[in-house]
Length: 304
Image (cartoon, rainbow, N blue to C red; front, side):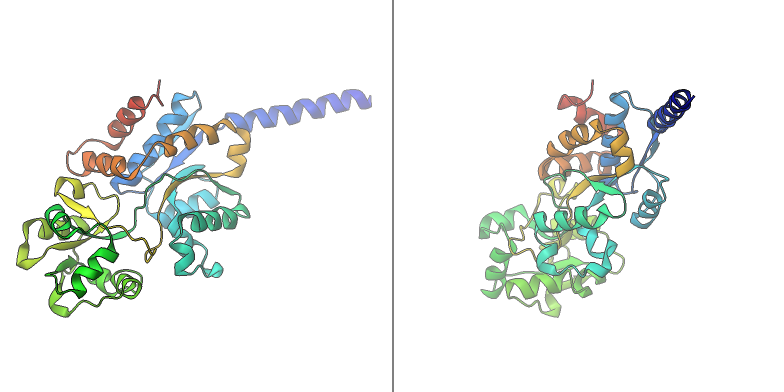
């Protein structure tokens, strides 16, 4: 009799495990072009592997996706390592930690373990605040980093940058650059555009509007290459590093351990110029994020 009972229990447990494994994997995502592309890469990769997948890559902003994954409403979505600064406020992550790619990734991964979330491999890109300048200015004055720019400005070089009020007023944006690299902009060197987006500021720099020859930007903006602008490097880590990585519910990963290798390969293939180009195909050419993601994955042999 005990043996029959054990057999029934084992069958029930096996059935439950099989049912959990067969549950569709829900892929979430944010709304901007880059997040849409990365979300589609995750979705298409899992679908191509024969897994049952539900596409919710247009779910909402960071807060919406965060609540959804904690509640088990979605299983995986692309998140940025730098967001650990406010996802885990009690950790009190400092600027030095946030500016180091390995450190901020390690902290994000460690701090989310207790939440049942696993951070997979991040892409070798940094979607963070940067200073962009026209290629001609960079070439003529040998500007490749903010350190080079500081020497140029302190040496009397002509400089005027366009940006939003947030870009100039938040302590972790332009003031952080000034503090880390030892320069201070005068009011006349700032063109503050209320409500401006990075592409609008970059357009001003590309066209020399009102004497502007620099603009706020994100490191992976697709408009930079199209407008012949250069994103200056931040060797001192004045800004937090925002590397995109798939984050997945640990229970989902345990049920489908092959996902880690698949998504790690995808994100390992992405570098800064590549992501800028892909972003531009959506933002400037009007292509769908799914088409762009599919074409890229196929070009890398990552889709059948």
